[in-house]
Amino acid sequence: MPIDVDVAHVANLARLALSPDLLDRYREELGVILDHASRVQEVDTSAAVPLAHPLGQTNVFRADEVRPSLDRDEVLEMAPETRDGFFVTSPALD
Amino acid sequence: MPSGPLSIGAAGAALRSGEATAVELLAAVMSRAEMTESELHCYLNLDREGAMAAARQADRELDRGEDRGPLHGIPVAVKDNMCTRGLETTCSSKILAGYRPPYDATAVARLREAGAVIVGKTNLDEFAMGSSTENSAYGPTRNPWDTGRVPGGSSGGSAAAVAAGSAIAALGSDTGGSIRQPASLCGVVGMKPTYGLVSRYGLVAFASSLDQIGPLTRTVGDAALLLSAVAGHDPADATSYAGRAPDFAGSLDRGVDGLRLGVVKELGGDGYQPDVSEATEEMLNKLAAQGAEVMEVSLPLFDVALSAYYLIAPAECSANLARFDGMRYGLSIKGSTASATMAGTRAEGFGPEVTRRILLGTYALSAGYFDAFYGQAQRVRSLLQAEFDEAYRKVDVLVSPTSPTTAFRLGERTQDPLAMYMSDICTIPSNLSGHPAISVPIGLDSKHLPIGFQVMAPALGEQVMMAVAAEVERLAGFDALPPPALAPPPGVPL
Image 1 (cartoon, chains in turn blue, purple):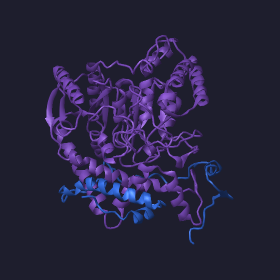
Image 2 (cartoon, helix red, strand yellow):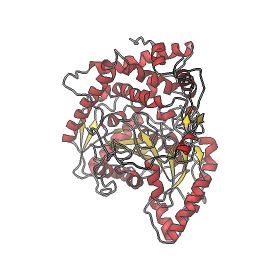
Image 3 (cartoon, helix red, strand yellow):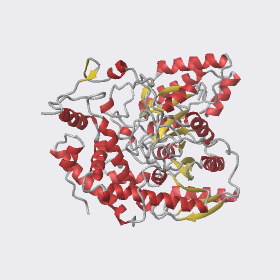
Image 4 (cartoon, one colour):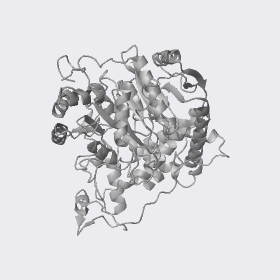
């Protein structure tokens, strides 16, 4: 059974401005893929802990020392718009 | 200069005996590219100037007796999801068109340090999401064995370049089979190392707990050489393995006598192309004749590995690709608010498969669904790893076909995402467990298309895995070349 997904909500969470046609198409495709993926729910995992790192590594720290970083001008060169060494964006609030 | 396709080993010997120079090796590879690119499209970007400068430098150094080792002067291709300083890096996406990274990926920096000549950046499925290299915003790569067919993916450009001789070796990345499956479909060797052995710094992230860089080469020995050059701890990647890397080339002549080989029961039977099953069976008989103990092993969770993968990989992808916001680099479609800029840029810049996976992952991570989908998939992953561990108490390596079928036709699976995802059914489990695995070509099917054989090993078990792979290579004696139109013509170097 295909799973019914509220694709418009998900697209908004993912910051994707999709047309109604595309939303319809993805609703259908996601439903079928998630139906297949939901087979994981048939496995009894009550005794299992989630695995995030394959070799079981946890936090890694380095010494808190000042080191050279990328050159600011070179990094900003790839930005669509900059001013005084900063990125320029549209307002975050309406 | 020797003729015929060269291995790293043979090219290196020619360089040191004075039979060839690095500039000549590069010229031979570039002339192959000139001949084949219009048909194959392995490369998004050939770095003619940069490569020539590197080749000249390699010649000068070798003349002076400054030998940087086996990769010195060797033309190597790099998948276009690894950052190359000042050289366009697009991940085959419109959203990164024109992007010139301000730094080298660690694997790329190590290639340069080893004296390798970087030929160019190879085509891939957008952000490495796909199994056919058809999801490239810049057009597909075609399989040198049959240009009506796909090279596999996502490292299809790297695999096809090595198969066609427009690179001696290449780097790819493997998240669910993206090195091994195209290697299998193109008749070359492809290896995914243990997770963490090669730094992911500068590899544009798809699914961080699964992604791993590895070699695509003509021989198993070459894979060991290329991997030795790029592997090793890197403080810039917090998930990088801090211990000593295995001696990849240490046991290539060991043979398989006394080794226990487990044939994965779940990876075969119905749904597998009969030629593939027969070639696999034949290789198992040959290995047994060399003293290997071959036994069937069942890993029942392999049946749900694909399902777990298609929750975990999209979930991590949706988080990683959040960085493409249209504000700091890449495509930018300015909207009235920051949010509108993001949504407009991303809708325009990402292709259909990437969009599909971002949506899938966002859903699997969203409130109300997280535990039933992503959390459950991660728990299945941990059970799968335990199942692998149990199997490796009984056998030294596991074996299977690399892919259920040989190369399929362009367009054959593009309309059915699930059918495309099934291409990776044999390769995905080793990504979920973080274990190493390698594909070695063992023959051709009835349509003259290459068949790959996969060897899997426990974490950091590369040495025994490479020993088995080298023996598979020796027993297969695979020396076929793509059809005459694309094979190196007689008399032309390489």
